Length: 282
Image 1 (cartoon, rainbow, N blue to C red):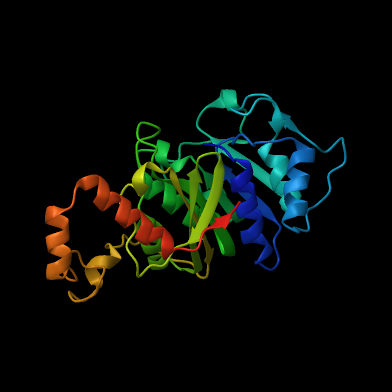
Image 2: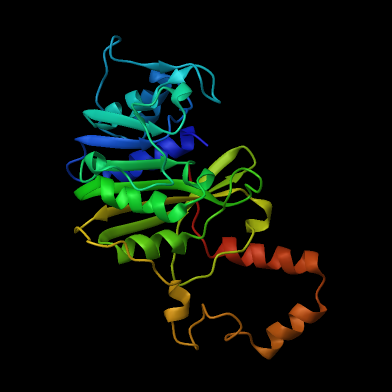
């Protein structure tokens, strides 16, 4: 999916909260970036991000993107403050720094090497999601950051998968990561918004047709010897918890579900969700 202007804003917001951004970054795929150097600099200035200024000779452009000729993703991450940026892709015509298959375990020389692993719209195109996420765990140094921007809803036919946020919280939480933060980006008409995910509140299954993306960040706190597969966290909750389906439906709610037209039920659910959710513009 590449990096849209709203995605760049979210990355800047997240990195601005971290201390010691810099070092080495690994980018899954050679991602397209929406905008040239000047447009990206404007976004980072708007976000009050202390970006690294690149000279004209340092700016690299990419002509093979969905956004036309735009800033190369390696230049974007150098602006974010990373001194060394590697791209990794399976296909050599994308001209990645590293040619490798994310569906297979990384070679030893890629392990414990990076301060950032970044994925925006790559994992959904890989069949072996376990290995893709496991490779991020292997590639990062302790203290390094992982970021994923991936589809939740509204992208059927785009890749192999759309994802539940709980997959990433569960996986990285079981494999030595902390400082887990999850946001959801919504594209409503021509405008983008995000909200902070409350893990104790259920998400709407289809977001009423609104395209929704996961924005996930976490920090590698410790090394693990073996990658652990999580169980979905909802099944670890007691039966009386509101997240356990059906346990909190009152007789009045059950009656309303049975007699109200579907269109009205969807309208009321959407209205209730957005009245309880603080949206931030991007």
